[in-house]
Amino acid sequence: MLRINEITAPLGSTPQEIKSLACKYADVSPSLIKGFEIARESIDSRQKNNIKMIYSVNLELENEADEKRIAEGFTPNKVNICEKYIYEMPENRRTSKFRPIVVGFGPAGMFAGLILAKAGLCPLILERGNDVDTRTKDVYGFWNTRRLNTSSNVQFGEGGAGTFSDGKLTTGIKDSRCRFVLESLYEFGAPESILYSAHPHIGTDKLVDVVKNIREKIISLGGEIRFGCCLTDIYKSNGYIQGIAYRDNNGSCEDLETDCLILCIGHSARDTVEMLYSHGIRMEQKPFSVGVRIEHPQELINKALFGKEWNNPLLGAANYKLANHSLHTRGAYTFCMCPGGTVVCASSEEEMVVVNGMSEFARDKENANSAILVGIEPEHFPDSHPLAGIALQRDIERKAFNYGGKDYTAPAQTVGDFLKGVPSKRLGFVRPSCPTGTAPSDIRKILPVPVTDSISAAITAFDKKLQGFALPDAVLTAPESRSSSPVRIVRDECRQASIKGIFPCGEGAGYAGGIVSAAVDGIKCAEAVLINEEDDC
Image (cartoon, rainbow, N blue to C red; front, side, top):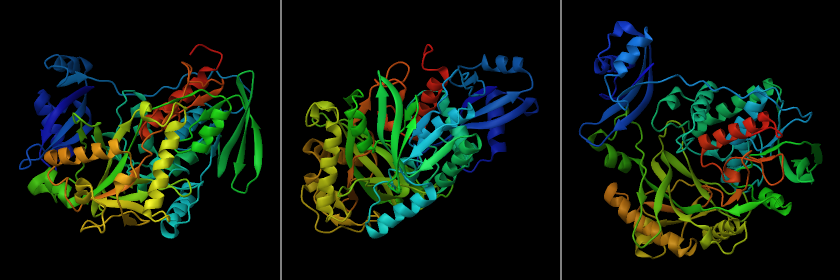
């Protein structure tokens, strides 16, 4: 199959027109084409008066010799031979009589469970939160009443934290399994565009059905999923896992015997991390990031990036990705930009406030929002304890709760006031979208000084790259403190923790940073189980 890159096409080009452009570029007769597909689609808006689409396409010819001959006439970055990716599971060599147990049903747990179920191992999956339909009611109930369910919320429940986000599928990891993840999500109901978009996303409204379809597939293959079941203890002997204990929503406790535990607990299961640490599981501090959510009118972002085409429906809502590395401050960067989305209160512990961003697939809300984050290295943690980063996160989130009014209202500040270093008494014309409300405040009293200094420098620098970014009435809402885990659960070359038979996995274990990378890590941990704990890894 030929991969042809950098095909430039006008906005609104049909697949047939794109195919014709690719044939012309590679000097291939359309009559020789046996198969055609778009491999990648992106927007080129560098010239705002002449916005174009850029495509990579796959052409399958009748004769493979012709494909090779054509490819030899171009540099590999322009035209090359590619093979269709097919994921192949390793042979199941596990001999244990015990079912593997997966804790957590976010991206890592879903894909670990899916692989184990496909291998015939009938995994038992425990999720502390509720099924996605009940969980959705819990989340909106919290936003409406301020009564937090600490077991079922934006962080906990079927689908993981990513379910109430933009459903972004971009990743920086280079692993062929990423393609399997995308194809699987499409199979389970995600939009086809995730297979070729340069910025694939599902949207929280569509993720709900995707998650349920994955659940039903695992069950059909012999797996079992128990919602409202929180891991409370582990049993070990001679350095090996022997079993676990969990508590359900009714307060009933149950013990389960197992020799295989995949921990997909997510970055917010702090109580679980503390329990594991008490059993001597080796952990280490890990850098994490903290910052704010910034909201602008989506129209402003569209005009800044698309010029006169700002309201062209073929372009949709514009998104951005920015970074700043000032000489005298820490670096800052935008993260999880949500075009046409909302800022949400994502608390999971009582009397703490944390915010995140969320978009539906249409991305048609009034505001754009993005995190502006600053990295915090372990040397800046309060002390050397492996869980010191969690303590720092909690301290920030408690301050936010107090400054917001002690009722889960999120503290907010206009960009103009923040840059001047004065508290906000009122907000401007940009209407904040946080469903639990916002309280004018002083974000500099909530976040560490080096963080706020870096955010201030970044906003000024970003305004030079994206006109209007430093809009005085733009709104900053704090804190964004759960972009990643501040703890890494150490694992060996077989992906096992210091207690054998335990496989720390995904974001909560410190080995992923998003839906796709977490899903890939879940796949890898499931593969490690299939290889068998006594075999060569």
